[in-house]
Amino acid sequence: MVYRPPVAVLERRAELRECLVAEATAIVSRQGWAGLTVTAAAAAAGISAGALYKHFPSKASLATEVFNRAAGREVEVLATALADSSYPDVVSRLANGVATFAWRAVRGRQLAYSLIAEPVEPPIADARLALRRRYRDVFAAVIAEGIERGEMLDSQIPEISAAALTGAVAELLVGPLSAAASGPAAELIVGQASAIALRCAGVLGTGPHNDRRKS
Amino acid sequence: MVYRPPVAVLERRAELRECLVAEATAIVSRQGWAGLTVTAAAAAAGISAGALYKHFPSKASLATEVFNRAAGREVEVLATALADSSYPDVVSRLANGVATFAWRAVRGRQLAYSLIAEPVEPPIADARLALRRRYRDVFAAVIAEGIERGEMLDSQIPEISAAALTGAVAELLVGPLSAAASGPAAELIVGQASAIALRCAGVLGTGPHNDRRKS
DNA sequence: ATAAACAGTGAACCACGATTTACATCTTCA
DNA sequence: TGAAGATGTAAATCGTGGTTCACTGTTTAT
Image 1 (cartoon, rainbow over the protein chains, first blue to last red):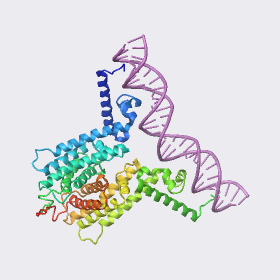
Image 2: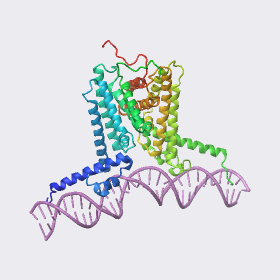
Image 3: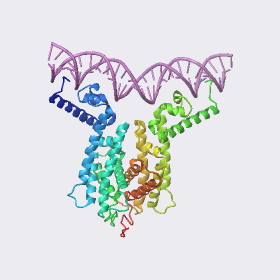
């Protein structure tokens, strides 16, 4: 071989690749997967559609990379919130985790919708299955710990409760209900989401009860 | 006008239209929306693709009719189960409703997935929104009644809990968890789904508790 | 200086389904 | 009988995006 690209070129190449992923992510966060065409992504990064194929073998490849990175970030944030050791009990950690999850969905609403519910082509649908599984596993671990420590109902199956919890919160945040959620409405929904999540997870202790005094 | 189609012809025409809807529904129940092409639907009904347009103005029109009819049936069944007056209390009715919902999803799994979660083109996505709203409303009514009668937590908002409940059960039944659900596993999931739904709805009374005796 | 490797361009090219069209057939009713 | 309406067929047409292709300009190592 008589040509070996020098470091500077390789760096620029890597940079452009990153730029493509970043721009594609921005498009999805703004317009959803429907807006992510090869032409649009390439144009946003300042190159032509054909050139994109010098960096990704196919659109699906770019799309799944975008998905997986964004999904990874979300799961990471959730896992971190769920592991926050400044809370003494598992229940508080769960509440904190759900609230975090919820807030992130309320702010990047379009991205949350795109990750969780928007119609997508098959390769991304697969990645989405994996995402759901990861959410489930993360929640399931917390529930299992809660059962272990006697803070949660022990007749439940952590994986199942976790899946339900994931679905419940997702529907709440991404579904039609929160579509029109302005500031205060959003707070209400996030608050309710946390409460519901705890009930879902079979939190023991005081248990659900109504106040005697009527207002 | 010198031609007025006689009753027999009109009947046959209506019959064929029904046949198209039925065949299209069958395709969706078997292969999902992905399998529902104009050609396939027409062929199943024994006509050519072009002829289908004598009965429906567009594919979207046929598809939404298929969706809405199937969705209507599901909601109807659920509403009936939730209204079963042979149960004395609201809680039992809710449990019964969720179990019915769940069983139907476990048997027609593909159809349930298609109605609730499969990627679809925009016109059907709209119809799906409406379906989710209907599910939510039906559950919300029951929860509201439960609160009214003092059987459920009164600090919740029925619509929100109902949305969460819908999402939870949907995720459970249509998500990856129940993908491999053979007979006994399915029963387990349905059972858990009912239990989770009751917790979600903030059922009072005995509340979640662990048995003292360890096995 | 020059062959080789490579990013990039812009214009084809292609696959896939939905729709439309041109034409044939049949039926009704003046 | 024959003009008009309706159904049906098969093939052509269209739109949309992803993907490929032929070619250009640039850079590197001999």
